[in-house]
Image (tube, rainbow, N blue to C red; front, side, top):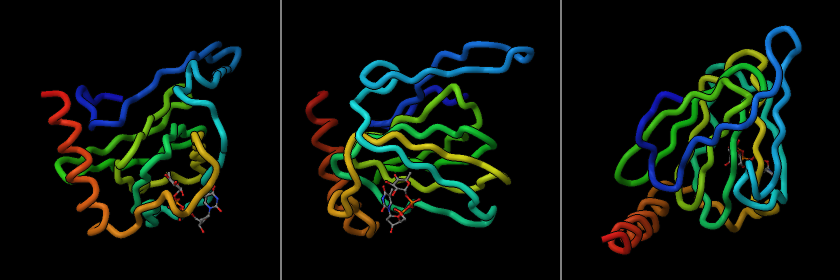
Length: 150
Ligand code: T46
């Protein structure tokens, strides 16, 4: 990942990449070590047509790490104040997305496999899928975070 400064509640995580082009590569992931939470759920997104964008939501409590195991995909992460696009193409790195960050996944390459490790079981109640509702909640969430830092 080439970005220097990441959005609040997001960060890149570098995993171990054991091996080389001769041996092949192995990446171990340990919960509460490499992954900053106990993993409660794993899902993966596959066979997404090139022109499809997924996501368009935020989570209140869920934390996730997105890892592109094969191919590449772009992730737009967004708060009401700023946004950033991260390209995932290395299985030895993950994008952590914490509370109240809007996300959109697009530009899936052919055969791309996006694996997601999640801190909670699936709950539709944790989703904010309407951007207008998100904006209202997220403005006060991120403003109070900024005030706490000041
Ligand atoms: C996220 C991004 C990165 C389930 O039944 N169980 C699950 O664990 C998940 C993740 C989804 N679903 C159902 C809910 C919907 O009926 O699968 C359907 C598609 O889910 P959604 O439209 O939310 O999928 P994406 O690709 O837009 O978003 C997913 C995750 O839902 C979301 O938490 O952050 O991937």
